[in-house]
Length: 279
Image (cartoon, rainbow, N blue to C red; front, side):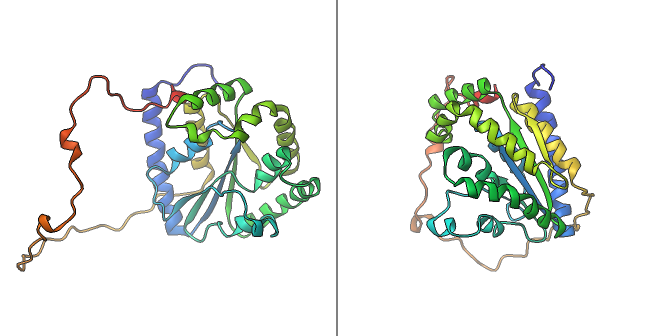
């Protein structure tokens, strides 16, 4: 990846163009009945969530939705490992973005000891078979690994410790990943050996620069899906019919939300929130 920073103006212009293309792609998914699964994996603080946010910003949540599962329940722990993910796979005309996925078993579960060595080995053996089954059934499966250096990850962690808007994104497990960097690296390498294979190869996103990472990832996503332009039905705006005597309910009978906005005054010190990790 180039060393030059991407200017905010260029970034925002290209992001807007790509987001318009994502809407085009969404219309094709609806019309064609395609089923798409996009997996986001990578280091903590590598930029997965920010990329998902920009991708879905203008999409219809009934078509494109994010799957971010919590820790499994006691019952789910006794099920076949892939079982709880299967129920979130797309039906016709749907896109599912997995913010972390079944690859938890190859990463955090392996490193933190949340699964047994036998369960880990079984996952590495079954995962390529499971993914091939999805693809053979007609699902378009795309896997993205967001790669970031240890120095950049620590920098982002430190910014989150003091940023009230992003403190929730920093967990004890995230902090511990700093001391387990090499363990996570070995786990990732082993995972790639077993799962970076046709027809479900990993697409590595260099994420040292978040803005470049988003542009590169979204561009690749759009290039990987065979969508075409779909004409939308022409809408005719109707004339409003004549009134029949209806009167709106008096405001005195309703519980109106207080108008605090009218009491606001301009402040020279007020600034819109800016994500420090994007600066």
